[in-house]
Length: 221
Image (cartoon, rainbow, N blue to C red; front, side, top):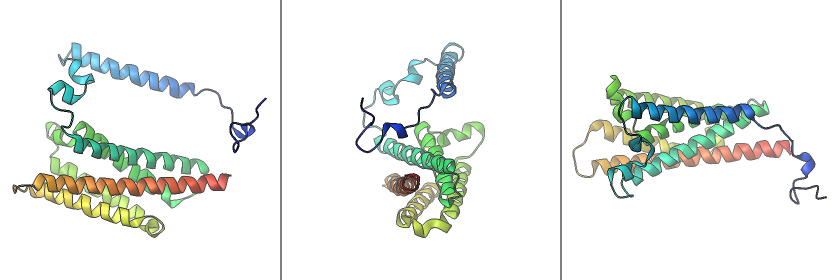
């Protein structure tokens, strides 16, 4: 009988665990609740479920390339966020007081929130609940400054050039947005700065996540 999973990993070293029934049921319950919410919107509020469950461009009858630039940005936000949060969680489980853990946690939360915001266009709709869009942008700026303050003590140990360029580009994008420029190309300038900032921040957090996890695996080996 083969006692290894590969030439490098002995089967005896793989921990056998029971099935994660609590998480399994939580995922199932989340799916049921989300579907129930869609049904309520459809039956009680008259919002056709067709307009909730399908792709926006398909519903609107628009070409597939509509919004692709913004969509790519949202994907990068979420890739960065999920990578950083995963690494932060793994570091916490090692029990070590690694200062990068807090940076990964806060950076991951920032990117995840920003990604969901971009994907669902939340800040554009904030005025509906009485919150000005500029107030939302100010909150993001404060959050990013907190991330930067957390990064400062360990910045020299990381790919700081990524983070520095990300701050400059995201800050520049926010300034262009708040200036409400009417010149030709203003929106393209704003979105280009934003996308570049997202890309560099994603590169920073993903490479940081990879390096910290590689170190943790090396110590555990």
